[in-house]
Image (cartoon, rainbow, N blue to C red; front, top):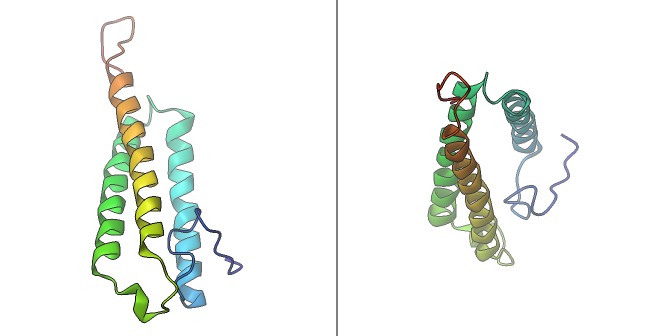
Amino acid sequence: MIGIKIPRLFVYYNVPSYAYQDRIISFLSFGWSIFIFTAFLNPIKNADLVKAILVSGIGAIIGLCTINIVTDFHKFTKTINVSEFWIETLCLSVYLLWLIVFYFRSNLKTNPQGNKYL
């Protein structure tokens, strides 16, 4: 909201943008952090929320890959190195992959009545 783009926390940190775009991204990020925090508090009770977060994460990775492929970043400035965006997208993909792995590993555990948790 204050107009600071921190590298590694903001994927396209060195791409020029309008202040309103940065504000939209910041409040949507805040909203997503609330969803993720809610799922973290009780992943068993919020199993559907966990699934929705994982599916939306896959959609986000696909979106970032699409942006990286179709956008001519050199139109903005010649100093933009697109490989940095791919590295950040790869890191986010690895993080999401680990979340999915842990989700399925937790899904294998059962409660005392023999029912699956998730």
